[in-house]
Each structure stands twice: as structure tokens, then as C-alpha cells.
Amino acid sequence: MMRIGFQRVARLVHHKALPRNPHLLPGLHQASAFGSSTDSLVARFCPENTDLKDYALPNASWNPDMLSLYQEFLEKTKSDRWIKLPSFKSNREHIRGLKLPSGLVAASDKQDWRIFTRCIQLEGQGYEYVIFFHPSEKKSVCLFQPGPYLEGAPGFAHGGSLAAMMDETFSKTAYLAGEGLFTLSLNIRFKNLIPVGSLAVLDIQVEKIEDQKLYMSCIAQSRDKQTVYAKSSGVFLQLQLEEEPFQQQ
Amino acid sequence: MMRIGFQRVARLVHHKALPRNPHLLPGLHQASAFGSSTDSLVARFCPENTDLKDYALPNASWNPDMLSLYQEFLEKTKSDRWIKLPSFKSNREHIRGLKLPSGLVAASDKQDWRIFTRCIQLEGQGYEYVIFFHPSEKKSVCLFQPGPYLEGAPGFAHGGSLAAMMDETFSKTAYLAGEGLFTLSLNIRFKNLIPVGSLAVLDIQVEKIEDQKLYMSCIAQSRDKQTVYAKSSGVFLQLQLEEEPFQQQ
Image (tube, rainbow over all chains, first blue to last red):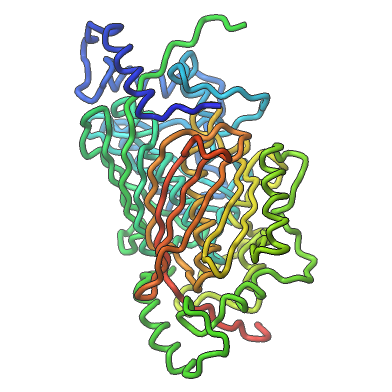
């Protein structure tokens, strides 16, 4: 059982990390607290050659809005430095070879892990989403199409499903923009309900990085920006993942 | 497509509702904006005779902590006015015979609807939870055991899964305590990660009801209260459901 708060782990890890990383890596990105450049974080996070299934690819359930905006952003990845983030079944697959800082270990006999936002594997029934990230501008766009298993009020996405989608998009953005690892706070103001099966576009921006924290904002709206679904802010704690021992018993 | 904000619907409905309900019902509860007593809301929400499956019942995946605290609260339902809330597959089944206010309608050809927090039906893999509600004290307790499909950081529940659990518990509490229907805001401060498979106890309190809004607070912690997982506040908009026409074409 883990009984040690984020902030305490952060202090421990930070103190430990500093002497271990006295030399800053070449090309150090201003955002990094620990010496990893955004490029190296992206390279690790988005492996080019992998046999892992990427869930952030179009399928037959995507509505025309989702599909055409996806194609539009895909075009931008060719010229405009946008990166399409792959989305694997579990965060374990994104951070292969790394592990949470010491003190944050959960013992478990469970086997089949899934990242929450990929918990439903039936196409179109649960979360359909894809995240694009812009490293130099420290911003992301998430195309989100909630399915009928994400219902709250009849016919509309549950507020909690949007909260989770925001947290997940913040999380990936925070990690890539500056090793933001844990949500410290999430504040959401809901404006309109998202009809199940329609597209919500989440625009995320890193506002500042200060005192080992990333401050981000998000607006979720319809593609034509005529309907704002919600606005939110999130604060993430920067914390460095540790190298996994090469061979574990 | 619904392009009308919550607040606007609230004003429309409120103005329309007032002349329609000039006579307050006997036993009117102070909390109600529209004349429904908490007792009548609870009676509708928790039908005694139903063939609907209740997902808030123990199963083999519940850990000993969850099971024993469930039994403890179940005892309290006999003497202490606590009510165990049933949890059906969709909110549609909780509000049978009622519908969202006019202006909040989503057209869809989908069939298999699930409330988000019951989206995974494999026992123990997703959300396991049960909510107890205390009408006169306007408070709730939610016993929440996240499964491995709710993962965020390896071995721990995704922050978004806790956010959704809080939103859902706020939502049920808000409806029963005073016809709170929509989340207006949700603010969460995360303190510690919840290990997958362990029990988190959410204590929810309605703090005040003012200007057609319910203000609630929540603390999520381990059973022994030694570890606080998160604290949150939520504001819900009071809005009356409408009678569903007896026969629909």
C-alpha cells in the first residue's frame, strides 16, 4: 500500500535526481526538469517500429467530422511539426524500460491491464480518440467521440467521461512537454452536454512550467466552435521515471 | 445537435415550471426547487420491485475491506436511515417515465446504452462501487474499488476514473438531495494514487443549496483514513425532469 503523497515523493526524487544528473544533455528543452529533451521523450513515447496495436487509428465507427479532422491533422504532421501520438492498451507500453519513482509501487496479481481511456475495446461503443501534439508550441489537440457506453444523461456523454478524457490528454501533453507525471489538480466548468456519437475537439495548451509543476488549460468544443462543452485547467507534477533494472526476478 | 447552455435551459425551465407548480406538495423538502420531496425522489429512484439488474451488489471480485464496509452500511440501512442506492445499466432505467427538459434532446440510432461507470461488465475489471445515501443529512458514501481496466500510472487507478466516480456520486447525491441534474463544475485536488484493486471510500456532503445550485464536497480516502487520495468540490444545477408522454410514436 502506497502511503506517500505526490509532493513528498517529488521532493525525495528531486533531491536524489539532481546530483545524478549534474550535466545537462545537449539540446535540453527549457521545459525539462530533469534533462530529457522533448524530442527524446517523444521518440521514446512514439516508437516508430512496434508491433503494439495503436488504438488511435480510424475505424468504421468514426463519424465524418472526426475522420476529416483527423486527416487534416495528419497532413499537418508532414509539414507543421504536429505529431500523432500512438495510443497503446496500457501506459506500461508507452514507458517500456522505465518505471515509477521508488516509493510508488503497487503490488498486484492482476494481469490484463488497460489504460482507463482504452478500457472498452468494442469499436465506437466507448472512447474513440486521437491526440496530436505540437512539441515547440507545447499544445495538443484531442479529437474525442464518446460512444453509448460513456453515457450520463440519456443520449449524452457522462461529465466524468469528459473529465477523464481531459485528464488523459493533459497527462500525455504534460509528460511530453516536460515530464509531467501526476495530476495535482483538475478544475472543470461544464457548459453544454456532448451528444453521444458526435465529435468534441479538445484544445490543450501548456500555460507555464514553474516550481516542478506544469499548468495547462483546455477548451472542449464542437468542430465549428459554436458550442463550448467545457473549459478546464490542470496542474501536473514533474517527476522523472526511473530506469527499470535490465532483468527482474 | 444541442446548442443551448445549461444555464439558459435552467432559466427557461424554471420560468415555465413555476406557474405549473403553484401548489407545493405536502412534505415538501427544503432542498427541492420544484416541489418534489426527497422521499418521493428516492422512492422513484430506488424501485423496490424491479427486474432490472442491480450492479451495486457484492461479487467475487470485492476485496475484504469493500465487503465488510458494505455489510456495515447495509446494517445502517435498517436503523439509521441510510439507503443503499441500486445501480442500473443506464440512467434511463433510474428515471423511467421521465425525460430531460425540452431543448436537451439528443437524436441517436444507438441501442446499447450504458452509464459510464458501468461501462465494463466483467466483474472486478472495471468499476466496482456502491453508493449509500442519507436523505436527512444530505450526504453519501461511495465504496469504490477500481479494477485493472481503470489504470493510469502502472498499478494505480487513472485520475480520470476517480474524477468520473466523484462526478457520478455527486450526481446521484445531487438528484436525490434536491433535483440536481447537471454538473456545472468539478474541482479536484489529487493527493495520493489509489492502488488498483484496493478500496477508496468517498464521503460526499451537500454543503448548501442556493440559486438553483447544489454545492457539494468530497473526500476520497482509505478505509482507515490514513491516506487521502483526493478532495473535490462539485456544483450541480437543479433542473426538473419532465413527464414522458405515455405513449411515444
